[in-house]
Image (cartoon, rainbow, N blue to C red; front, top):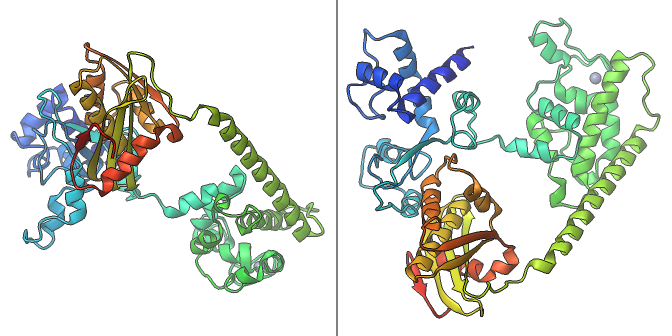
Length: 471
Ligand SMILES: [Zn+2]
């Protein structure tokens, strides 16, 4: 209840800074904020209303969730707004109070990846960075309040969702990892029982690990399905989350006939049979449980293999289209590509303009310092478009190999996020009346030249280099 209250107050705080011209914002700002900027305005006085006190108390969550997409840079506070990195830059040296170290190299490189626009109408824009699409939601603010932000998801989540198990099995594993299964130990904590012992073997505490691993019945099964190599420290770990995370790996990364399939399936059946023998009279439990589990593992392996074969055959079908093709007569093809080694990481952009005979008109590469892959893709497109424009080309056939980038560009102007200003700029250039620009998605294999140039950009010193004879 307190958390949802805080989330609603965060929403009001966000409304104040994101919609400063709305009537409500203007009234509240004139009453409490005394013309201060959004970083300084959340201050309570002794005689202010409870609502305002609540908004002020939750302002740190507003600051945590909001970020600036820099356009012309006119309203962004260099030190106090969050724009280049995941924190306001001032936090990098607020700790020691000494500016001699200035900023860490990682932050400097992310600043270098920014380009301030000289267009006056491309103003800076605020967006909500905690949600997936840049818009505020109560859910995302709750996750900030619970210190469970989207940018730092629990690394164990991925494991759970990739573990081979049907949905009910996945949810069960998730419950087990978070100590939420109703074993007697947990029931006693909730005053649902006064006996914490195991119903099967009378061991004094029925913990999650006892139910799933250490109880006599479970131990017999594990000892038969475990390889010798795994058995060594299988029973040693005392934290259910760690134990499950250690064993539930992604099966796609390794041989499907592996522990990654056996482990979650065994876990699920041990749990199921245990419940049946405790709560169902005359339960239908297979005589040879280990053989039953091995059958299930084989079934799952087969299903996975078929899935893979289908994926491979669909790739082969697509291979017909993946060679670079020259554009139609009168058109110029622009292939662009961005590369980033990490997220964010060292990044580069590259692109090449070729005419209908396949002859190179111009190419470029750029060092983008540190940014995300999607930003690198977008900056590559922007540079490519600007170069094509400067060469007075009338018809441009743009080809990108990034699906994510295409999707963002195809969306209406409702996209909000760190790259919204670059996207706006690209769209403005594309929509100029003096030329025709088409955008198509191409396969990576037909975009090799641009790909090579973008990687070349990473290792090159210059911010942007344009030439007509390929290196
Ligand atoms: Zn037991």
